[in-house]
Image 1 (tube, helix red, strand yellow):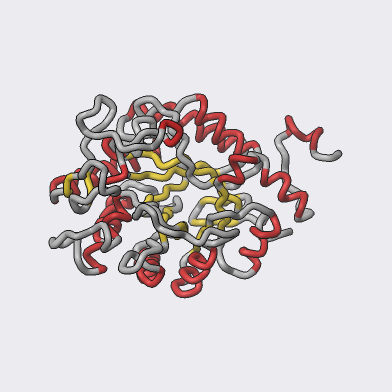
Image 2 (image 1 turned 30 degrees about the vertical axis):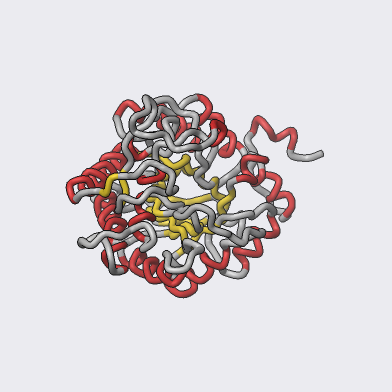
Amino acid sequence: MSILFSPLTIRDIRLKNRLVVSPMCQYSSVDGFASDWHLVHLGSRAVGGAGLIFTEATAISAEGRISPNDLGLWQDDHIPGLKRITEFVRQQGAVAGIQLAHAGRKASHQRPWEGGASIGPTSELGWQTVAPSAMPFLESGPKPLALTIAGIQTVLDDFMAATQRALKAGFQVLEIHAAHGYLIHQFLSPLSNHRVDQYGGSFDNRIRLLLEVIACVQTVWLADLPLFVRLSATDWAEGGWSLDDSVALAAILKAKGIDVVDCSSGGNLPNVKIPVSPGYQVTFAARIKQQTGIMTATVGLITSAHQAEAILETGQADLILLAREFLRNPYFPLQAASVLSDQVSWPVQYERARNL
């Protein structure tokens, strides 16, 4: 059997293969509620054979949404719609994961297909954004408020409450979103964090919020369930968050009980040139894994079974996350297994299509 289709056990959770549906924003919620769209979107990837299926970035507060249409988990009423999804995912032999997030200064934007522009706090659809420092993402955009210590405590409380709700909704893997220029990443990077208190300046101060979020989450997240952190391994900008920083942080995360570092990059600065090519972020996962020993997940233009298998064979990562490829093909795992000559279970409803 290929490595791609061999099982992986993390804590008490067994993934049937190494293929993971990466968190992908759908911008299709009303007031944070999961809808039939989310059930079909995530459920079809479970039917298609993925081992682990993440929700999109799920806001811990209404103010933490990227757009007014983001999925949320800031109230108990959000639980039933998500539980319907996790139950269906589990029925297909897959594991349901949730990514919890706060967008920080990148909150309060239109949906991409509506233009993606900032929505100012005076607009009926917008709200006041917050950040480590009062620096907008775009110079022309609304200025966020610098979080006070009390505001930071509210963020911590919101992460803890959302984690409790995630358990009630039936999620078995939780990922803390500390990447893509959202709030925690904004604290990590010296280019977006100009604070002079205990949350700014030195490396140890800039990682403080993430470590406090982890500690809060761990007070309620079950010890036998996996906990991931997604990092942007680099800002792709001089003077910003770097791969060396990510390696140093990953070693700390391992000591703090994080199971997997999910390695992405960028997102904290506009107009940054990123050398995109097939598997362009794999080297980040490889270096973090090799230098710290923590398990890593990799993502970014991975589009074929042989490409994914080669990443695992060379020990560069432990999990393969697909995003756009899963949008194009919800049944990628079933087809990839055939390419690699692996025998995997198909949904009984689809068995008659297994062979030509």
